[in-house]
Image 1 (tube, helix red, strand yellow):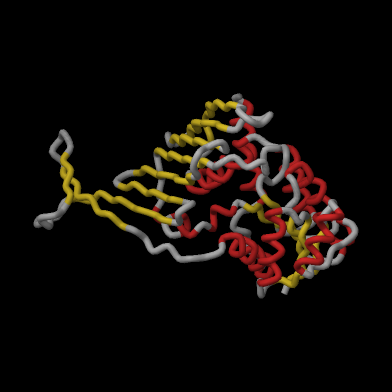
Image 2 (cartoon, one colour):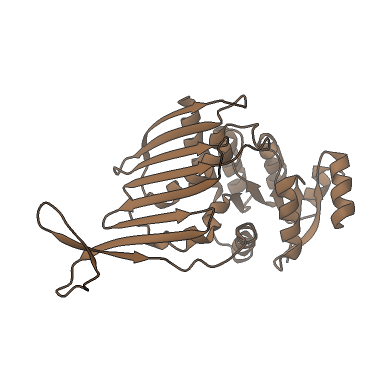
Length: 319
């Protein structure tokens, strides 16, 4: 078991603490939270060991789970890495792209593993179909959330849209060619609703919408590719695949058949892949443990986290 400590005991930090304590791959040593009242409350309520400083916690563990506000990610990660500790760091990886690049360099220099908490990679609705997503040419995402003051310290692009940016970058095997975007601040000091269009060098286009002032929650992504359409509902944990194939000689009388202007006929097939139940946060933490133990590449690398942040920043720069 890997000795692990958590930096930050806010809403998400408490979830991480609970799951790490349950995990058979980690030994939870304790946590640090700068707000003493909160640290004492969490320690008393759940029985976790509260450390007096970041340094003391880092010194006591092998893996540091960074679940602090984004502004402090860099300093926390830097101290952990330079002490030879592996880091799991919540998204976005850091506050700036230059900080993210520095973290990558340090991790390589000190030979430690790092993984970024892009949890939607572990969403069962996505994992059920990701192998069916092959060279998509148009992608549409909608990530809408009801207003919650938590997270409004950063633009909605870094709060919500970055999930979809990471998913898109993970399935489009091409470099970004051009980005256009617009955003509006409604309640917060930073944009609460944003739309972005990302064009890739291979011709793929992704249209992303994110809002944290919606009346209902929605987390849907649609992938369009040659002879197939894949829909992923990250919120409801459902997936659908629609495929078009050449019409057989003797099609079923109830078959759905389309014919284009050139007379080419295609039959439509519907698939609803089995979506296994899981805890995505536990999965991401445990796959990181596996990467450390077996010396393999983490599912979401520091480099991928930096790339997602880079695209997010390019979107923000359009506002």
